[in-house]
Image (cartoon, rainbow, N blue to C red):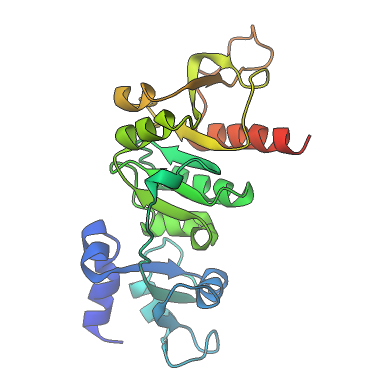
Length: 247
């Protein structure tokens, strides 16, 4: 393993480096195994002896893995994977249940939301430009492989959602003044918009929402936390949408 290879891996911790090289980092035997079986191209694998075999595999010592790893606790393997190019088709947006993320900035939250989307059969997520990069190493690890199955796009949300609303696609968002989600009519298709951890939805995005929802505390008159974590709220909303499809 060369010094240049170590520098390359280190550069991929930063979005600028990932953009420049067109690569992202994935770590761990299970995730890399899924990547090798997927449509994504694995450029290089650094692994401890006996973990992987193949032309793209370079066996390294545990000490070298510690130098390479971007995790607090290094695993037994690390892969360099080509970032896929995924086409966003605005005219098809909302034909199926879709998630839109408005400036969700915590990598752990984004990774969890990608896993939730995968679990609930949501195949596409559209993110605002200020949302965390889905190929950030922390996001990749948090998705636990879901990033292979969920297509993630980045675009200005307000005009995209306004266009969908003009085509009568229902746009759902969570608001304190919204209607109780458990008493609301929910459709099988549409777009669910989730906002920033601290600010919620931006003003421009909020204006595109056609159906305001509220997740009530229990019991309704009990003093409770001011708000829910965005990933937890996303899980509750997605679960309720899917429950209505399969009562």
